[in-house]
Image (cartoon, rainbow, N blue to C red; front, side, top):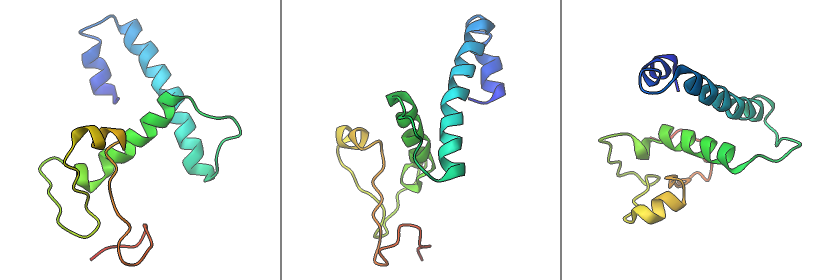
Amino acid sequence: MNKEIQDLCGKLVPQAYVSQGAQARVSHENKIKQLIQHRKLPDEGWDDQTIELLLHELAVMDSNNFPGNCGVGERESRIASSLVSRRHYRLGHGIGRSGDITAVQP
């Protein structure tokens, strides 16, 4: 949550609660940052909230989930059931013909 949203939340609930929540989020984000920086699994396993936060953040960046976007390429997902979509954390991309998930697609 960015600073502007935190400030707005402070108008709804006491700022102390907002600060506590922000600190908790930073704790989760630091674990994600370490994973990305070091490119290896942590020595100590993560709690479910941290794992789900990472998956949610990745799903938000997935072009399948951009507001108003409806892709029709070979890698775009088409999931008819919202239940299935949620179960898979809204991640439905395929790999494409190259077999390389990181390959740039035409």
